[in-house]
Length: 216
Ligand SMILES: Cc1cc2nc3c(=O)[nH]c(=O)nc-3n(C[C@H](O)[C@H](O)[C@H](O)COP(=O)(O)O)c2cc1C
Image (cartoon, rainbow, N blue to C red):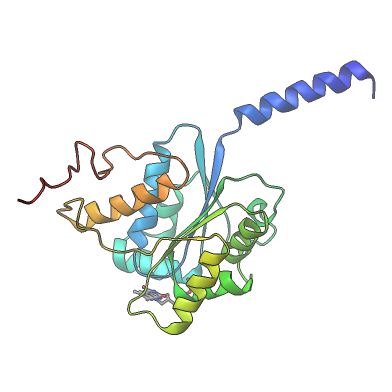
């Protein structure tokens, strides 16, 4: 290839890369807390320069309908890119597809076990496996209670591998008035993991969430 053409190709390629939005893979499994995924997708729409790549499991459709009253299509409209549940040839199934990482929200105990063991029998699990092998950030919003020793062992192993275990736990210090407030706070914490700030996020010590006056 002539030198000039090679340089031109190189410049164009770099420009294309710099214009590329940052990609976040979002997995939704069949744990309770379907609305957490809905809120995360909506929050990501507000983040300039980012795009969502969504994959769900079969069971996620049950919780989505039961807890949020949404169907598959309504959920998909919130994402920038959507993949088939068993589309293991999709872009997010390859480590060469550049992403900033992945969030599984909510993450069931079955999916947690699949991630821990590398048992990638769905696109969601394959995408998580790829995120791990590429040493990208993986955030698991695990949801179950109470937890048995298998769940805890899986969480510890993944945490030791660098996975961010962010269970869907209730928060009170941010003075939520509704379940939605609590859910949004958790979503704000997920976004923080990727350096993103959610408008209205009640950070401790901020105007929105002042520490209590010192007790006398
Ligand atoms: C309404 C509903 C709520 C559920 N909540 C949970 C939960 O909080 N945590 C969990 O691990 N499984 C929960 N399950 C069970 C999972 O959906 C089930 O284990 C499923 O096989 C998970 O598959 P997946 O990980 O491929 O989505 C729930 C199921 C239903 C129908």
